[in-house]
Length: 384
Image (cartoon, rainbow, N blue to C red; front, top):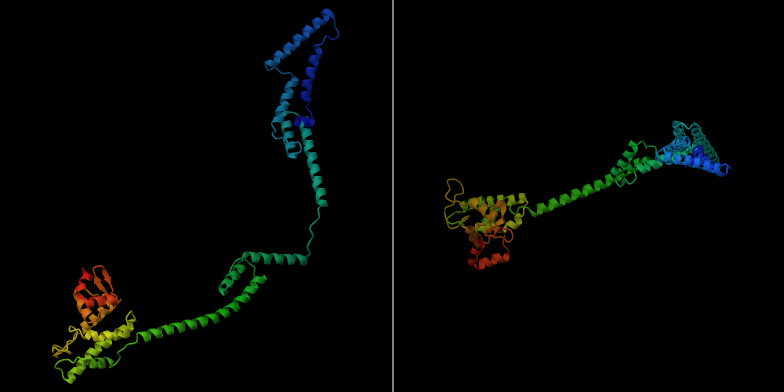
């Protein structure tokens, strides 16, 4: 408390008044009626004082003490060791009219401040000073700091490929670290790594091209046409040995063989170019099977028309239609009406030919096809 620091003369004045009142209550050495009369007068005076106190009356000393205490209370959390707190109390005392006390608080604040400064000075003189760097040492320190800062800037960035290294180098360059060893090493490594990558890339490209060429070679071999050039005509001529057209002479027979052979060759080349699910090699056994269908070619009729005006004809469009349906090409599929014909001429290919069954489109297994061929009455179950 501030009252304990500098003393409180106003409280002392109040205490002195009380002492005086107690002294006045004594008889002053009188005896008899004089002492009694003096005592009764003093008692009356004390009663008057107590009554005045009860109704808020104060002596001048009490007023001074109350004002002083109000100033003390106006500075909360007062710290007598804090110069700032002492200055605040000094200002409060001056505003309250207690000038001597204000000066005392101000002097105390300045004394503590001076003491603190002296302590700081002594402490700074006792503490070891940092060694001053020479010019060369400072340059070396700055260089080390830049190297460390550059390394921190690109910390964690990958450096596997030349593109990775270039990204790191660009970041260092943008930040102005082109003078540090890491940047210079990156630039050298980028060039050497690019050379290696070019060699590796060239080798990979050669291998890729070789793989593509091999794949194309295999496709070409897989989808190579079975019938080329005059092979189609020869194929039909061979077929005619067991299935000769009725009533045709050798010349007309050769013309018909050429016409049919041309249609087969065209279809064969179409499969080769499409390189789809059916290759010419896989399709070739079905060329003859389709020719066995009377709707396509009937050796016992004379209704052929090879060219306009001729008396002989075979249905090339039916030939293509039957093959496309057997191979499931162009969306062709079997219905209940066409199923039996394809089954009879062995044109239903397991897993390939599409059947429009009651459960939707699908292909049949070889076992199911054999079952239906052995018992045609079960065919209806596919479509009902």
